[in-house]
Image (cartoon, rainbow, N blue to C red; front, side, top):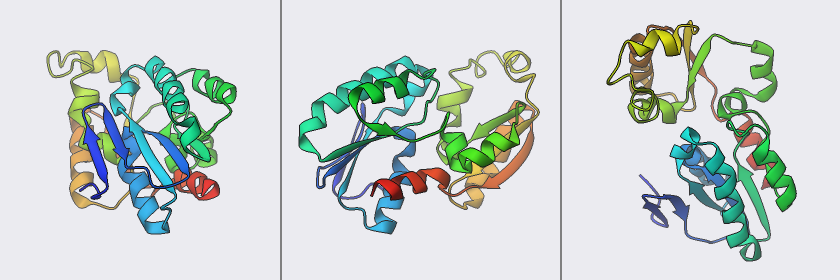
Length: 209
């Protein structure tokens, strides 16, 4: 359940302003960031999330972040972009440098949830990753966009080079774990469970706070 001081629109998630640091984040991270804010009493941080569906169109992330920074620059003491590169090919980092704002380090959320150094050391080229959000939204963000609901024969072409589905769990939830196992079965992949917690996301926000 969203907190009483929050609103949810079809374009994304935004809290009511009540602080001096604006967090511009991916909608897929809303629950995790809110949990960290509550646990740490970071009431001076204000969360504004852009639509998670932008991950299907990474070029939109850069444009949306730039517009959101421009709209809010004068209203906050600081702005922090809670995105990793997320498929933008370095364009988001370049834009953040141009705008004079900082962002979370790492190539994507799978990396910073596990810890960027740990993730890089694994060098897993045959693993497909899901987070809590993607387990919940598997059909909307994986199964249907890839056309597997209409053409299951695409499975071999899209996932033939993968061997394992790795579920990086932010919270320990048996129901989500069971659903992630089902996702692995649907894709014909081995299943691996890793409880990562919030990883470098928590570290980055704590440093900013």
